[in-house]
Image (cartoon, rainbow, N blue to C red; front, top):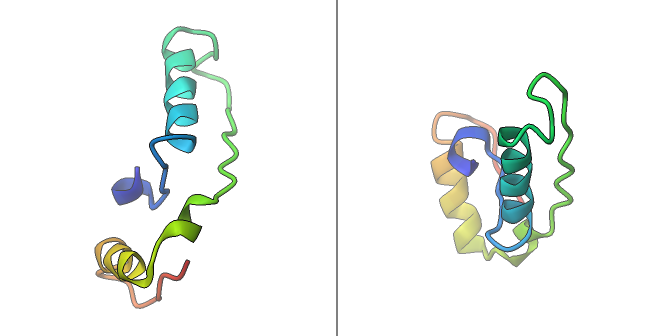
Amino acid sequence: MAREEAIILDCCYTGKVFRGMIEMIEKGEIPKQKNVMLLHTGGLPGIFSEIHEQAMQQELWQDNIKEFSL
């Protein structure tokens, strides 16, 4: 998700919520033709150090002039 959409999901909370949403869609509990909003409240970026920030910035924004900041 981070590489393709620049959305970081942690493996404990937002990752599980996202996977649960996908499973609900696959099971038909959420119709595929319906719009769904998954509210990502953040929190995860606050645990990254400057080294993590620089690595993400380099990977996610290699071809972009804008700076990535947490």
